[in-house]
Length: 418
Image (cartoon, rainbow, N blue to C red; front, side, top):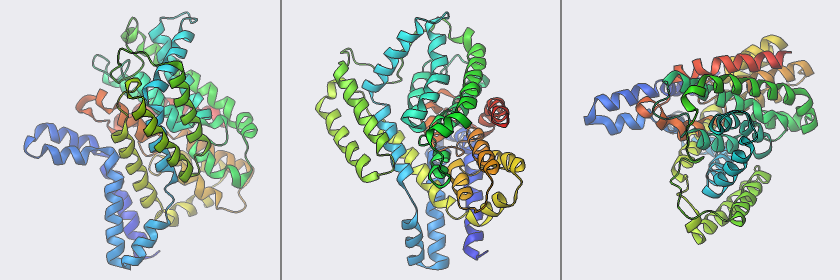
């Protein structure tokens, strides 16, 4: 253990404390108008890890020298933050949202419940499972924008909002396990352990699907009296009067598919994104404002997590390597809440000699705990950025999210332990 390792762990701990106290700063911003701007900045969850990553680099430059700090920052892998930014913006475009909304509304007519209740259930169950095809960040973006005007608004009890948010985060985390490429914690180990999509569907997928359906059904039943008869658009954006032609929506879906296919090749998906930006400008009459600010903030958050998380291997990996399989499951479930489930499974993939049972339980614990905190799963910051305005003080409290996510996490854990 070097001095820099110790300082890295301390700074990471301070970033965690800052993350969990973000709502406190938002409350201060409303009470202290003289410094409201500063408190709002400190209360932005998406800013926290980027800010503390900058602190880490400065400290590293002072302790180890500027060259070491630059080398460390450049050695990090930023593909995931870039991908999440791009896929959020493309998936949240008006043509994609309207097409998905029309399809789900058509399906809702065949259900025995009011359309709004069916659409809420689809947003909490079907879209998270769709994340196994379009990736979890895209599923989180679509689900959040569909659910925001229905659940995350004035008139819904705050505890129910947190219950729905917890279900959404947990369901997205486990809903991507039907394939081997959509969930970040699975992607980290799939190649190393030769886990293909057939293996994931047979081993994880059906259990995740049962948990997703059960979680979504329970919280929809709790919400039904607050949403029955509600008529809102599937998008949070202002909808222009001119309808989007089908061909435009299909072109947007093609861009989204291309981004997903090249998810591990930033040169290609960033190039596609630039073409996408040009297309939206060319046909601006069919667009709503792109969520560039929200996407950039989420990318900044994840990049900060990449920088800070890279200094935690020295204490995380020995813990993972030393535990018995079932103890490893619960340790992974808990550690995910304070790290990132993809980082945790990546460390597991570096350990030689893990049994097949230990591999399964490590990943199962990591994905089951992916909804407990905003940093537990890569798509969670996207959900926070898109939904926080629907909560009191326009901020999502760490305790509220934890309590809301506990019941669906327990359901997921029980299913994975079967």
